Image 1 (spheres, rainbow, N blue to C red):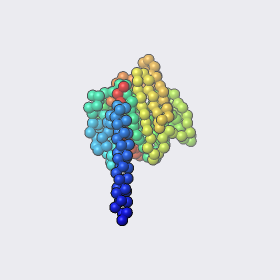
Image 2 (image 1 turned 60 degrees about the vertical axis):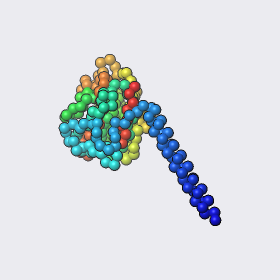
Image 3 (image 1 turned 120 degrees about the vertical axis):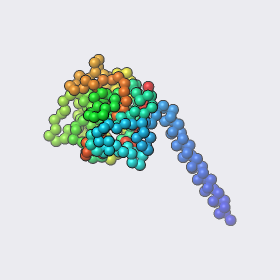
Image 4 (image 1 turned 60 degrees about the horizontal axis):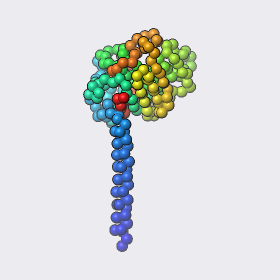
Length: 239
């Protein structure tokens, strides 16, 4: 005789639980919206992005994730957000490296059909690739360096020697890049790896004449055929 009551109680609990989950989810979404971040990657396709002419097959979308795997190539944001041009901003990226992978996130850059981008800065994505400059580096300017046996400390830029990269292969990590005026800050999983103020005239490292703050778009690097990197978030807030 108590079964109908029991069923009703269980059903009510399920509804309340679902409502609570929906409320929490909605609160999270609302909080993110309040922060003013706009997602540049839609999780479905590469709409709003343009691949360079080199190895366009290096970029694909699989199960909501941007998969970067293949020969040297670059993917540039060319969509409508802020006219596709950014000066002062916060960028939140979520990425995952596979063993031996190398990639990078460029800012203040511009579309190039071929070659390594000549304009803007690169934030390195590299947990275990042979390049000693690891995730969290402002590439060639302020480097987080992990040396393998027999490797020498790279020349050019300031190096911080570590035992291990801030990111780990096979694990998602949060990359938070902030540019305000002449100041560049990089955080990996909440840890500040770079807090750099660009000197007058830009970096003095050889070969980095184009590495100057100004304005531009974002880019994602496919480095080599042995590298595989996943991205599932690329959100920006204009400052």
